[in-house]
Image (cartoon, rainbow, N blue to C red):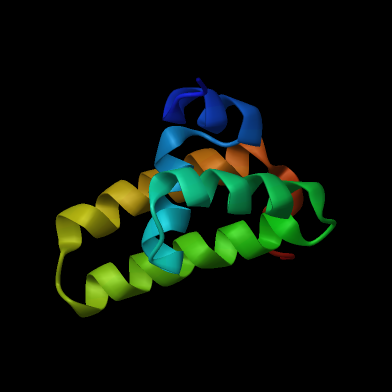
Length: 90
């Protein structure tokens, strides 16, 4: 049987990045791993993941959940370091 950790390992993102996708899409983590895998195979997929994390940060700030916003900023930082193709143009 494949566990959630196996699916996360196969999708190419970290657990925190998958959790951000799950939060954004309002789906269980296991579904988010499938979304992540599909997105990371698309040319513009990394930019879509970046935008999902950005949206989650904005939502957290809007509801004044600054601790979660800080956590998501760290997720964004690591994502952009691991996937420089997702960085916005200067």
